[in-house]
Length: 183
Image (cartoon, rainbow, N blue to C red):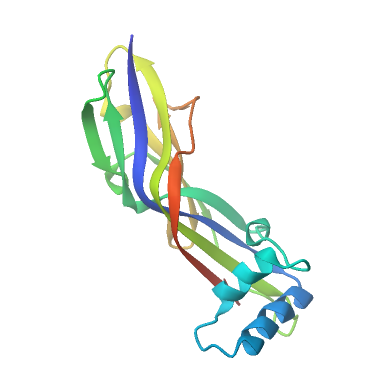
């Protein structure tokens, strides 16, 4: 048996979507109004509330969706042999075996005061890695699990020969941007 390292690099995100109580919605809009800065938006208010004593953590507002990983359309899967030589690489969106789970955006009921908060912590780096032990590597046996929120496709795991890679490590990424939308 030979050991092969499999990993995904590129851009991706931690994406959450969930219901935000009326009093939390009011806090967001109050911070925006009080800032006096035309560039202080929902994302800036959410970040500030992360640190506030009476705030909340955006990543916990996830009763509709929560996924972390590489963007399917902006990442590449690599396979290295035991000598650390890349023997196979492919853009993730070109992999034929995808297992997709789709979650639809939710909308807040009219005049409810409840908000729907959608957050993207956009990151760059290595989004996951693991190893397989096989006699010969066959790229046709690779599959990816994809969690989708409307048109945002996140690679959440790598599979080989229908088995999830057991020693999957969630990699090392660096945050590049933070986006938040409150509907």
